[in-house]
Amino acid sequence: MDKIIRKGIAFDAKVLRQFDDLIREKGYKNRSEAIRDLVRMELVEQEMQNPEAQMMGTLTIVYEHHRHHVQDELTHIQHHHPDLIRSSLHIHINPDNCLEVIVLEGMVKNIQKLADEIIAAKGVKYGKIVMTSLT
Amino acid sequence: MDKIIRKGIAFDAKVLRQFDDLIREKGYKNRSEAIRDLVRMELVEQEMQNPEAQMMGTLTIVYEHHRHHVQDELTHIQHHHPDLIRSSLHIHINPDNCLEVIVLEGMVKNIQKLADEIIAAKGVKYGKIVMTSLT
Amino acid sequence: MDKIIRKGIAFDAKVLRQFDDLIREKGYKNRSEAIRDLVRMELVEQEMQNPEAQMMGTLTIVYEHHRHHVQDELTHIQHHHPDLIRSSLHIHINPDNCLEVIVLEGMVKNIQKLADEIIAAKGVKYGKIVMTSLT
Amino acid sequence: MDKIIRKGIAFDAKVLRQFDDLIREKGYKNRSEAIRDLVRMELVEQEMQNPEAQMMGTLTIVYEHHRHHVQDELTHIQHHHPDLIRSSLHIHINPDNCLEVIVLEGMVKNIQKLADEIIAAKGVKYGKIVMTSLT
Figure 1 (cartoon, rainbow over the protein chains, first blue to last red):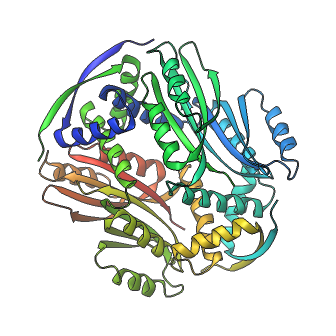
Figure 2: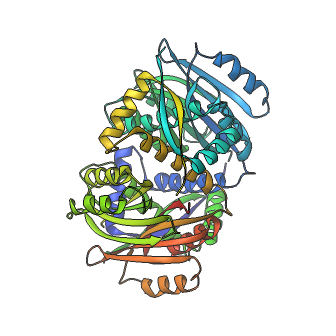
Figure 3: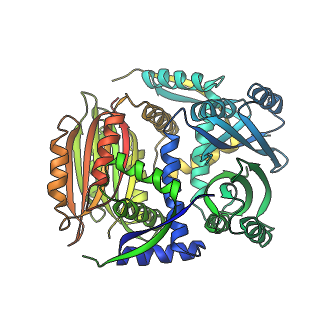
């Protein structure tokens, strides 16, 4: 757990009022918490630009399970990258479609490459990834 | 499972060449699959603009488990919305930090509101959501 | 010009160090300036969600000027919306392609609709819009 | 001007119907035009990942003109990069605020660096950049 430091930040009165309204509506209990979240998001955005950075990626895909042996193919791809895959979660959306969330950990470039490969697999309808920091 | 229709699409020769290179690198086996993925992503982007649309959301959050009783708070929030929460997945990143993936289903506006509330909870460092279609 | 208010914000020591590094690299002279920029971006993101909000939009398009009478078409579309179009800037990229930047002002939904129409015009290769606040 | 090639693409009947509805609403006259726009956007997304790629960037900033000699500072920064700046467009939003659009051309990493520096200048409230391809 990290030390907390208090710093004075200068705001325009009007902007501060609008920001306080926004974060109250979003459910924040105090302003510091909301500012810290913005700062952390900015750091994560920066980290993602570095292909060698160690991060986690949450890949969400939707696929039709009865087409093209897609589950065999997904299992096959994932077993070739045991070092990158931390865990996965499966949900039956409806009779035709599945949603799968795959949590990856490793270098940004390797996460991106594996995500591309999974999304490109026949039967996978589309996918999206979000990256998060390890720290 | 849906009927397949074949349509003729006119491409610039040069753009087609660049696209074929890109999708081969990403791991696509054929061009139709890659075009279909683009089309579906476009439809999902559109659907997200409608606050009343029924969709699924994958929310990824990172939090410090030993701070502010954050797990109690997260459990408390989630139990107030049993209708919106489908499943969740938990990963211990390191001694201080946890990653949690929460899969939500419901109207876009309700998913967004609950995601905002979870991200705003004290101890949650940041969060990101991706939306996917039910169809 | 607005009144300036100073507020104490609590940061984790490590996050603050990383943020200070990042903003120095980006060219910021002080931390308040960088925090204020994050806060304003967050407010703009929120404002964009409201279809009735009055904003400005910067639309960048690339088109092939010698195809499909695209310039006539663009002029035609723009003259039908004199109330939405503030100004435009034209650049000859190379013998085939033009870049045009069109600055729009009005309700978010009207800006989006006109941008869609311009991007969809025959000969326009693609386009992207960014929204900014009037305040 | 480039040669046109026609290719058969296989679509799911339902997805095709939804896509046709969407593009009609956006103003597209035909499906090929809409598919080509998606493909070009995908190529631009890819190109942006390469820091050495030659591209164009449209930077939109909002600033308060009577604060911190911001115009002198912006002029100063821009004159240090005559090779990167193609053109700019200025709009008086209201008594306090100006919107400026600066069109940049050069390597992705240099465009990004200059954009960061301009956004970080004192008095610039925020800024956003979109990248476009030269081809």
